[in-house]
Image 1 (cartoon, rainbow, N blue to C red):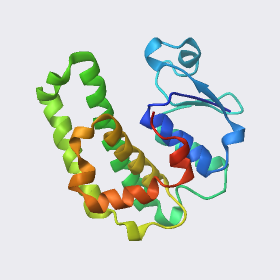
Image 2: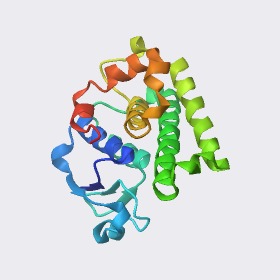
Image 3: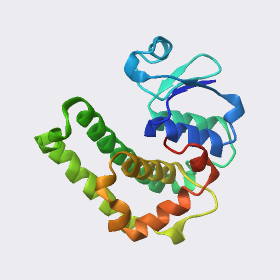
Image 4: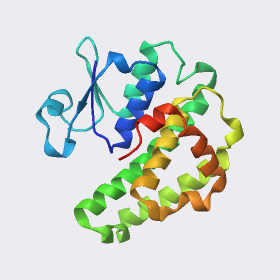
Amino acid sequence: MQLFLNATSPYARLARILLLEKGMVDDVTLRWCDPWADDKALLEVNPAGRIPALVTDDGTTLSESLLIAVYLDSVSSRLPMIPTSQLADVLHLAGLGQNLMDVAFNTVIARKHYGAEIDQSELGRRRQRAMQRIVEQLNSELHESQLAPSITLGEIATAVALDYLAFRLPEVHWREAYPQLKAWHGTVISRDSFQQTAFV
């Protein structure tokens, strides 16, 4: 298999963490690329030019991080990331993580192309409100004591999103505002899979 990615994408990081947690690193060739440069090899497997993109052993191409995660979880029975006994809870949390990732990423990209003043636009203010609401909800739902030795897709997606928020939008100060969430997050990112894939 091949995985197209870069080092600062939260979506690509989610896929890499799945590979590490599932013990599938040796089964996949990492193809580092710049999606903003219309990388030719990336466009051949994903015409949208987005990462991550996964090429399976039979040549099928998959895009979107959560869909790639579902596929990787299905092809290896080791440590299920989406256990059927917790399906609704895991997908609920994965959705919150994905939504937080989206609003944070879109904020970063909008600022890159239009300047920080874009935050004052109608869409910019909507993103800021959504970011705050999601973090507040995560703080109300997540407790360090809930964590099991294994990890789920929901926990991975949420922890990656929070890490991306701290990496790209430190002015949000979610760690200072939500010590309970900070403790939960600190425990999750202490895992080797997170340490190996830390944002740089």
